[in-house]
Amino acid sequence: MSALTRFDPFSMEPMSEMFQGLFRPLRSLSPDEAPLGHCKIDVSETDAAYQVKAELPGVDKNDIDVKVDRNTVSIRARTERNKEEKNGERVIRRERYTGEVSRSFSLGSEIDDASASAQYQDGILTLTLPKKAPADQKRLSID
Image (cartoon, rainbow, N blue to C red; front, side, top):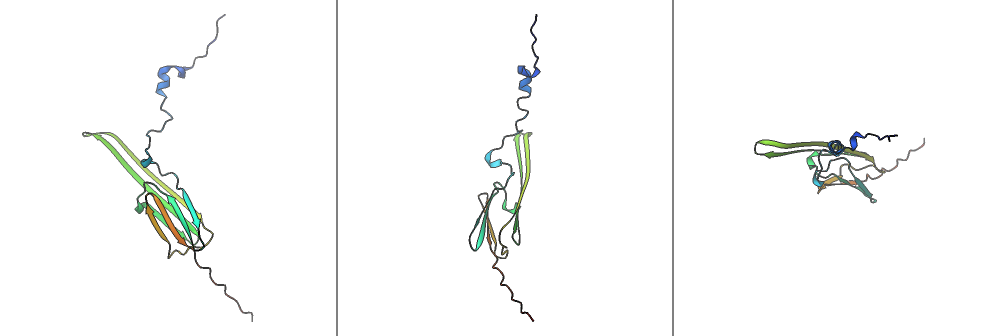
């Protein structure tokens, strides 16, 4: 009696080499070319203000947009990278990347947007957001 064997077309060496890089990214990104996928945020609070630190590596400060509306803070960043490698006059490789990230969050107190400030250095956006002084309650007289 003969033994049955199962044929697996992908177990053959030439076939496995063909599909070896199929599920790998098309290009490997170095740390300075990391895609702008997430915006990590740290928020700290004092009695007078909030301080927000957002990681936005590789983004030009002109491509960052920060909006404050009462107690809601919105951060939006966009980056675009073009890289081209030439060998003489022939283009060997050309890569483009465009990315955008945005975050919105609410804070516990209203922000005094007139005295708020922002700094961007070494890929870290630092927002200093002073709290609005609570409005004095108005006492109504009863007639």
